[in-house]
Length: 236
Image (cartoon, one colour):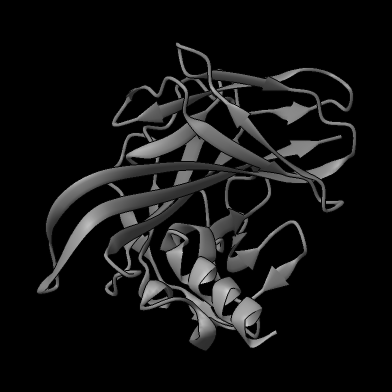
């Protein structure tokens, strides 16, 4: 029995650290906002499929020191003040003009996972009134839609995976439903993925990218990098 336990322990150590660190950071906020009305934003870290939201002092490395940026229509982006809550962080902004607003987080964890560098990112879109132009989301890895809208149950949802603003062919995306269902999809040669939601509610999409690459990060050497990027859709 001791020999079996030792084998299992060694097998666990042999797994890439990225398989052990499955948590993600994501943003939840209503899709539509109104001019002059405060709009609330929530930021969480954990496992969306099981509604596990870790308290901020338990977040990996220094991820709880992220910056939340607001990209406003026709204006420079601004950093929003965030306040810690029991299960994450909250922030708010008040739209002043019509258009599409984007909320963005991109944070490289200070600590390495073994010899892997980790980047957590997320973005969310808020439509206010008549949207004439799409907001420019600066995140290096992201899932994008032709139109940000409320999606319908049992109807196809299509999005594109982009890496550094180019189609991420064969990119991997996990889709998490509010009922706990999840499935991994692989993008086609043009970075597109299609799926059909069968439950109503808020879905989280998590794109990931793992590469063998060398460098130093906060004085430590790494030989691989991992990016995890989330966004969400509303299904009615």
